[in-house]
Length: 138
Image 1 (cartoon, rainbow, N blue to C red):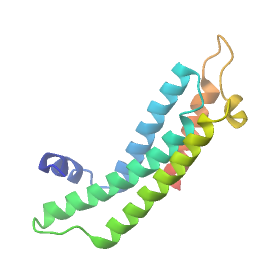
Image 2 (tube, rainbow, N blue to C red):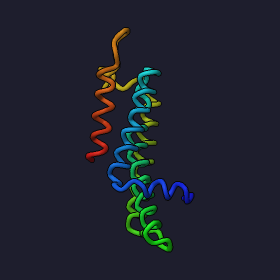
Image 3 (cartoon, rainbow, N blue to C red):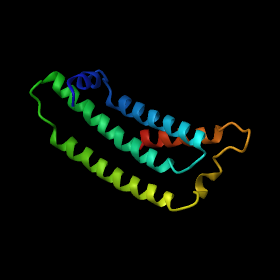
Image 4 (cartoon, helix red, strand yellow):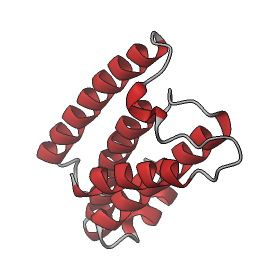
């Protein structure tokens, strides 16, 4: 990791806040992309992607903090293994779900969240907000 990025990550005193920021940011982008494109194909890949990026950001924050307090610190093994497991799981699940949705015409679970013509995407925003909260609390 680049030293500038390490010093930035070390400023996040609470890794949970960093994780939440990543999750809510990813879900905000997912909401905007879904609202603009009117497609449900981004939902699962965004959810699993947010989970993976959250775990990577949390690990990077831990490593940055360690480097700041002890410059010769090595990569912590247990958190590295746990982060790698989350990444592998997230990539596997995300690719399966994305492939599944690409091969189907639509996802009936999500159709009710899309606004009708002229309607504001309030239900869609509610869906993305609940997904983000689920990822932060999960």
